[in-house]
Every structure is written in structure tokens, then in C-alpha cells.
Length: 350
Image (cartoon, rainbow, N blue to C red; front, side, top):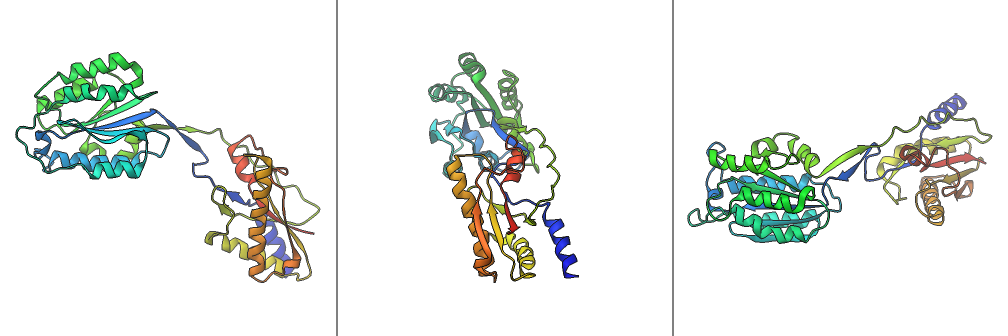
């Protein structure tokens, strides 16, 4: 009975792999659609008024949208900034995108200000922003948060066209609309019509379930699917009995975590069945990185498993931890799935 249980466990565990997970999904990776983005918020008097259908101040709706958008933007190596207009003001100067710093800038936006004598100068704001865009390299996404009620200064449509004429396809202007007047929406629509790259949105559409994540994909990044990984090669019987089991470490990590314990307990149960048997605990890596570093990493992973087994009752003189680095792959290191399967630990009878 015990021998049958051991053979069953060996059969089940032999098909599992010690995998060391990465932060990015195995099936796709994120590619930036823009190298830079600027959040440009209207703080004119009309934005301090209550939206006619939504019943809240438009500036409050805009700040809520900004906070949600910041959470949805992925942590890629963007250059980002945040500016206000009417009057023009820098809240976050252009620099490496930092989600916490951007959140702090958004939180610092004042929403209690006078309605009167605070005209909407969207066209002038675009003129003021021009030198900022000029200082950026690569493609820039400009996201404007406004009700479109421009009533003072330069024509905003003409200024948006001037920016497109100057920067071409290195600039894309998106407008999140809080318009509640036909004229305000008309100005927004005409800015959007200047380029097919724009992604239209408003408060209601963005705050629907799942909509902000989709907007982030439409404006900031795309996902490129990896080629399907080949099916793992069939398990070939080995001269030694091998227990291969599934553990999940973070990138460049080797410490045992709580989710690994049930699998390790199964392995320990097999080792307990023959107190005289000795085993090799073999650590492996994929081929990413220097060979010398991978050798050390494989040794640390093997020693982590050995240490846990010893602490839980297996005699240390029954276990020999050994690292093989990247030198004993079972799968194709040219594919992401193959590399994932090669990051493993095995226990072999000696």
C-alpha cells in the first residue's frame, strides 16, 4: 500500500515544475503607445459650476477621473507631467513617471475657487504648453480635461491645429469632456476631429466598470501576445527516481513562501518513507543573465528547499544541495514558457 502511494505521488509530482514567476504576464507584454504623456486640467470658473446632468462640480468630476486614470496607467518608463490652465500652472513637472508623485499632484488641485472673473483660456493654455511639449523626445499623448467653454484668448481649435502642424504624428491630443453646453461640446468635438489618433471620452463613459482600464490600453499602451509555447517534451524515465514539484518564487527570489508549504510537505512525506535513503536537491535556472550569477541563484534555491526540509525533520546528512545553474535545461530557453519551466528544483534519489 505504501509503495503504491509512493509511486502515485511520484507520477503526479513528476509532471510539475518548480517555476519562478516574473512580474509581467507570461502570455503578453505591454508596449508603450507614447513615450510621454501630459495631463492638462481646466480650472476655469465654468469648471467650478455644477454639471447640469451629473449634479456635481465639474472640477470635482475631473479630479476623480484623474485619480482613477493614474491608477490605470501602467508603470512603464514614461516621461509625464501635469499642468493646469485658466490660469496656467505646473503641478507635476515633466520627469520619469511616478504613480505616487502624480497622485500627490492630483490631490493638490484646489477645487474651491470663484466662478466669476475666471475665464476659460484653453487656446492660450495650449500656447503655454507648447514649450513643454517641445522639450520632450518621442511621441507625446496630451490628455485635456475640460468642459470646452473657451471664452477668452486664442482660438483653441486653431492652437490645437498649430500643435499638430508642428509636431505631426509625434503628438496626439485626447479630450475628456465635461461639457454641458452645445458650444463647449462643439469645441471639444472639433479638436478631436483634427486627428484620427484621438480617443474620445467623458466622465460617464470612463467611470463605467472596466472602462478606465480599456481607455488606458487605447491611449497609453498595447499588449503584444507572445507566440504560443511548444508543448513540454514527454517525461523520459530516468535512472534515478525524481520528484519534481511546483513552487513559485518572485523574480530573483529564493525564499520559501507560504503557498509552497503544501507541496514541500508532500515531498517530505515521500522522503520520510525510507529513513535510510539519501537525496540530491538540485536547483536550476533558465539562461537569462550571466552564467556565473545563475549558478549562484540555482544554489540558493536548492539550499532554500534543503533548509526547509531539515527544519521539518529530514536529517541534513540525507540531503545534498547542488546547483546546476542554466546548464541542464529541460525545455527550450528561446521561448518564455520554456524559460519558465527551466526555473525548477528537483529532488533525486542518490
